[in-house]
Image 1 (cartoon, each protein chain N blue to C red):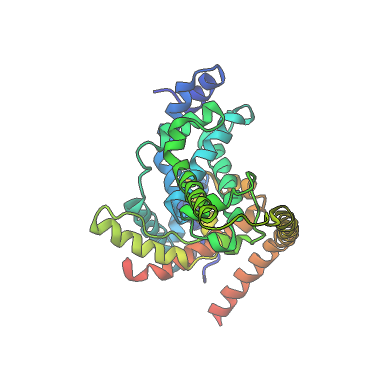
Image 2: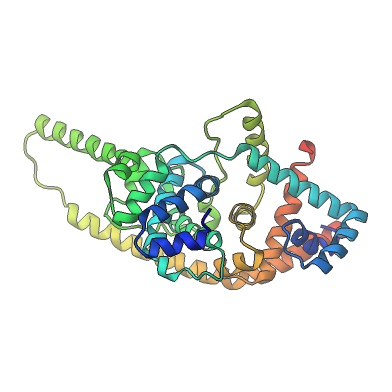
Length: 197
Length: 157
Ligand SMILES: [Zn+2]
């Protein structure tokens, strides 16, 4: 099996199927991350597509010294933050009407809302089984207790495979801040999930 | 948060410690109730996430590939996403037709000036947002450290 870096090289050489393989390979992890961050399926799907458009457009910026997944998730994270901040006050939960509304003038419209107000906790998605539903209930409840910054660090570390140092670079904050947020997140999760353990 | 080695335990959990340090952190965690609880919490959270991760909808990967290689809106991505926007536009168009058929011609409302005002407001909101982000990014690290410190002091008290 080709490595991610080899697929990137093929794509740079004009092989579009190589990009398809990369999308397929990272599909579920990336979607799950965006779904938890967006809080709704429609928003996550938009972010997913926008992420890959940016990956294709900026593939020249990827350096093979770093893991492709780390670069991919930093692109996805920035895409998601842009999208979440564009949401209007009345469109925090994206539905058909508000999805159209955020692009009404054909350009992204920042809503002026801070991060703390735009990152929602994940809303329940389609339940595939009782166990999955119960797991979702427990983890959503625990994640909802985190601050947006703590949730951001915890989800990035869980899904992206980025190190805390790489996360610090992506977020543009010192590593100590990232570790402090992760520690606080872990402490709150421990507390909230105490009954589940 | 009552153990000052929780940061190391966190790095241990995610496999970010060099082997020598990892051994020491493992020895510590085995004998520290706080760190054992921290690890149990992280493991439980990870397991619950894995057990409830939503799978990407069928067709999303193909739609993303099409948009990525065309750099714009292909048929698949339209089918996948833009039907929502199209539905909103269509609904608006139907309403407009209904209004114009049902009423006598009226003066054109001052759409342009309303849009201009709205865009001005949006620019202003964006400036405020940027200023707020600049401000918060300068302060967050101090705040995080102080907050974590205060929390641990509170617990030890
Ligand atoms: Zn300890």
